[in-house]
Image 1 (tube, protein in one colour):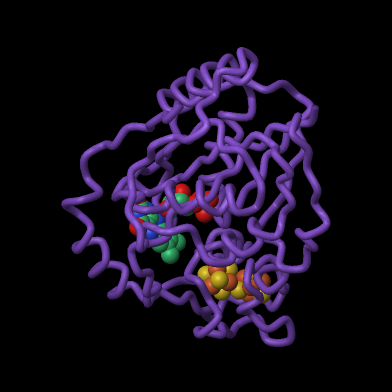
Image 2: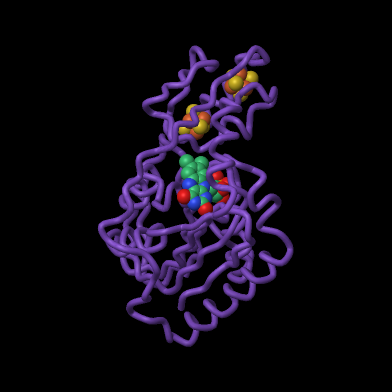
Length: 254
Ligand SMILES: Cc1cc2nc3c(=O)[nH]c(=O)nc-3n(C[C@H](O)[C@H](O)[C@H](O)COP(=O)(O)O)c2cc1C
Ligand code: SF4
Ligand code: SF4
């Protein structure tokens, strides 16, 4: 039996939540990074004994398309999946249901599902600092229950999850980061962009058609040179203020 942590985590919130869940499954955990556009995901072949903590963020209530297509290539072959969706305290809408369906299509058996909250990667004032100590303890508790259910072989063949089909339409968000004067052309953002939207030869630019607004380049730029239009950010914050303000809890579906 092997335990895997399979994550698409552009700015680290999803990774943190997945690590809280993975901790209950011991130290020997193999990580698969779904943000790598060069990886050959079709070569990953799992087996029924394997346990995979599979975590993606919610983008507009959906699984990010790049994560969906990469995950669909993995050969699950009956491996047990813990489907985890991480969202920025607004809502995850159809994301968990979509993730469950993608995993089933790739040959996984969905043993449990978790919705967890992490700091909003565009509007960082929402769910700031989450997952926090309270979340970590709760996610650890969830993972203990999931592990016990797997060990007792009492996992449900179908978990009823919130969400609807057809899934909510995702039209993208207009926030596309650009580099300002501080850019030293180090190339890190081009190297780490999950969808290759930053040309390596001119990293101060962004292919706005390809960019998925994941904010990784903004988060990792050592010169803090990349940013999103501040007026757009302020307008989005105003729009989401009501729905993002009240602390939302993490949820376990077994
Ligand atoms: C393009 C985009 C769309 C998002 N849409 C939602 C959303 O619909 N609901 C929500 O609660 N959070 C939303 N978020 C916030 C992320 O789901 C959340 O911050 C998540 O933790 C990001 O994962 P990461 O830190 O692993 O990159 C969105 C973030 C991005 C970048
Ligand atoms: S990471 Fe920052 S400094 Fe480096 S190329 Fe990108 S924008 Fe420029
Ligand atoms: S250019 Fe767009 S897709 Fe690429 S890292 Fe930056 S925000 Fe993400």
